[in-house]
Amino acid sequence: MDLSSQQINANKKQAKDICPQKPPQWICGDSREEIPKAPKADFIFSCPPYADLEVYSDDPRDLSNMEYVDFLESYKTIISHCYSKLKENRFACFVVGDVRDKKGYYRGLVADTINVFRECGFQLYNDIVFITPVGSLSVRAGNFFNATRKLGKQHQNILVFIKGNPRKATHDIIGQKED
Image (cartoon, rainbow, N blue to C red; front, top):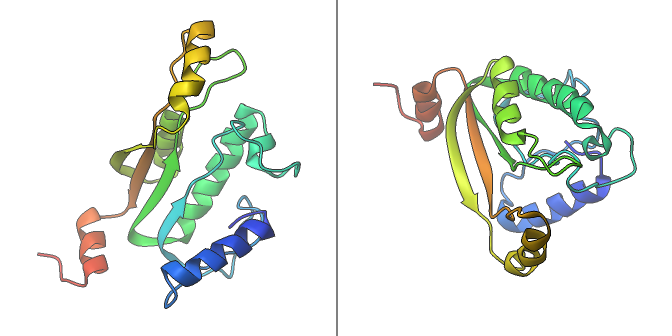
């Protein structure tokens, strides 16, 4: 689900090459709203905005436009909807990275994500560190470090959560009966 129809169209175009037989289902709308007719999902994946690190639009519903406290409240609503729409014994995966506030202190988005998922009924199952390509980090980090002694981020966290029993989920996915 995404507020941007342009993003959804780009996703659909990309899906034709990646998974033409069984493309994901996208819905244009606000993830904070309940979708009563949406079917239960086998898997939920999201790479949500990292709070206000990058502002995606001027739409007031856009999470990237919100103060952090409002972001977390909306984030919890979205994750709660994910829980209600995910089948029992299934996984949800969110890719997140920590961000700094206006004073330069880390907000704790990774920890907040884990806490919100737990509050909604999920259990943290895997925390994968994804090392992002170096690219221009070394160039950008030099001036940043000299001015503030802050290091640049070189990774994101891929957080995998389970609703239910991970053994049953695994067996359901690969089509085997549980031992």
